[in-house]
Length: 116
Image (tube, rainbow, N blue to C red):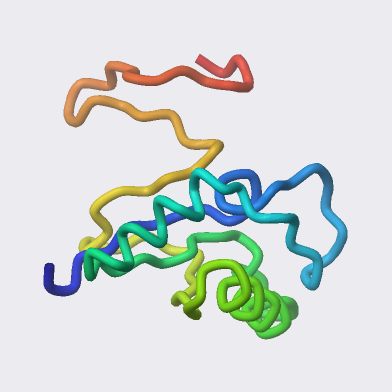
């Protein structure tokens, strides 16, 4: 499986989210996604948390520490955290993403916010 990895959004995908309460607050785990991530890890796949929480330099260290603690508690492992995609990312699982067919612009999903 090499250096390929699966990106999983935190807020609203892996953990429940209703409103911003600061970098230290992460909602309860979403069981279906937690089990999926645990399965991927058991299969030897690399999984990273992809979140905007670590995108601002003033908040990055505190946010990462809270995420590492949450991951250890709910996933049994500390996952890498990033706010960026790269060429090794296989997929991104995210509550805000809308899938588009490669090279066509054809929407395969739908906008949950009415932006299509």
